Amino acid sequence: MNMENFLLESFDLASIYDITTGELYALCDQIKDGSLENTVDSSDVTGKMGMLLASLDRNKAATITWNNAFLVAGLLAAQAGTDIEEASEDNKIQVPNFERVELDTDTTAKLSYVPVGVEGAEVKRIWLVASDGTQGAEYTVVADTPVKGKSFTVNAAEKTITFAADDLKKGSEIYVAYDHEITEGRKISNIADNFSKNARILVDCTVAEKCDENIKHHAILEIPKAKIDGNYTLDIGDEPAVHAFSAKTLTDVCAKDKTLWNIYLVA
Image (cartoon, rainbow, N blue to C red; front, side, top):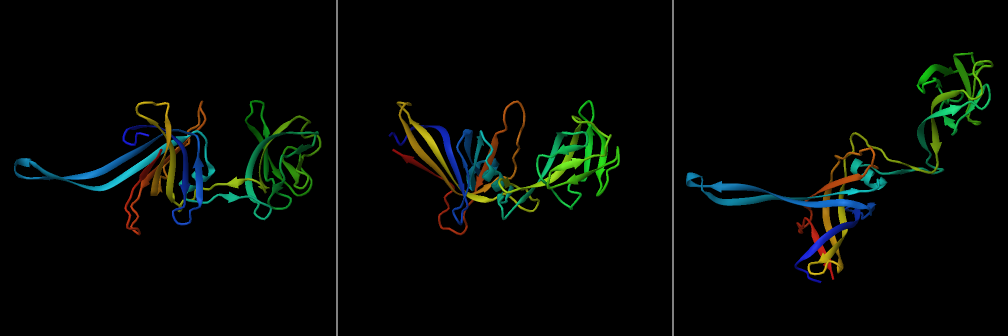
């Protein structure tokens, strides 16, 4: 391999770690594009007639960015400065739900999940679906007998909402808002007083030889310590959202080595 001249073709796999424990925060394996921007602040020293005598460099830094084709849960958590909460039988996570339900009889509708909350009032309100799909009349929950046009009862165990006789018809639709619990799944939170994490970053790259681009080699970009940028946008549109990532190098004041990044070329 020509170690002096080479083409940097792609970022193939990025791995992001806790700088102390080595815990793996996230993997990005579908990186569409990326960059490594290097900056330095310079302070000019001038003399008589404004002549430039010297230029003093300070505050060297680098910023790595990329866009991953898929959203990565671990990366979202690292950007938010939080940890992923895993649902289990011992750690049930409460999830909000809003759904459109069709009555399966003249008086009852079946929910998708078991609602949770105050017993007998696990679902507090429902709304009739108007002919144009918007919300219509609001009903509130009662403990005993429902009143036509005003209220309903809920049986959480059976996931059933019941209306008064002669109120609605089979096939009528309602909007329902309620909470339910999951034992499989994850929760990622962005908390006001938690901020993005510091991390060690490794990026596996593909490089090609100068004189024959068909000859590929492996390179590794290492950033020993970086501050993950907590500013990011998830755009939704005609194209699926990409996961934008950015991090700025930090100088490790607790180490003698002040390296901002290393590139390892592997023949």
